[in-house]
Image (tube, rainbow, N blue to C red):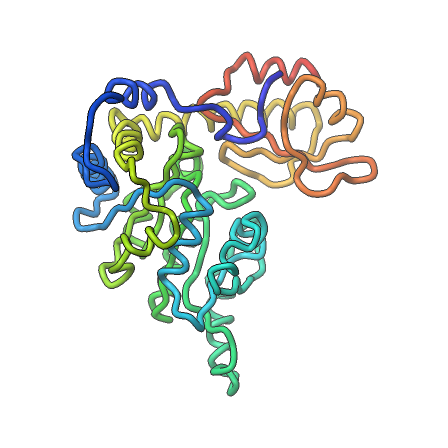
Length: 341
């Protein structure tokens, strides 16, 4: 069986795992107060070009989103997000469970447009009854989006400006950040992300770590009580050095971006071969997630040898499927899949 379901199905990249093995019998203080986490924080700040940023290491993506959004919002506020956002569709109401509403905006291949964000905020405050309504307290986007698409630098700058003018924070979910930054058409850098977002996270779980997400807070007025907030959300790992070691490895010798580029190269190979054979791409994704509309009989045949996801309900004759590449994918996997078509 070959696996294209997601990018977190295997354990950890060998270089990450080796760091864990090499330090396994060491004794360090807990809760991220160890020297490995301190060094990982330094490396992340350097990569972001943000020497004064706060860095916090959490375990998983949904946990991170729920913790950060809860910390950024007042009790009466909600989070603006595209209707296709992970927090709106695939997090089982985790945000609502913290007492905050997800305020959905139209999505355009997974993205939101700055003018629509601005329009929503302006119209909200034009309503004379706005004090009885859930206020837009922040904007959530992801890079890449749920559909593997990426924002251009101009689009991010426009969104950042709208948020700045409205005095609400811009939060970027970077679960697959490395794959977005590694895309050929990407004109955004990690330093751009750090400059434009008030808070964002660098995904580790889907980028070669066993688990872990690195939250970067560049706006010093926000999340001043992050450690107790993490504790309340069950997000403060006692063996914090396990997260620190992994991000230390990911940000040594450019491993994070090497993983991203490798997976994206394989995804582009897959995309080219599928389109050459006449199969329709549902969205023009430049990252490691590729979406195709395939005949159901072909899907059934492929599933005998390959594992991948249906993206939504099955259609009568054709269905949308998602193939995801990662550091574990090989060119032999790609060729094997293509041989099955």
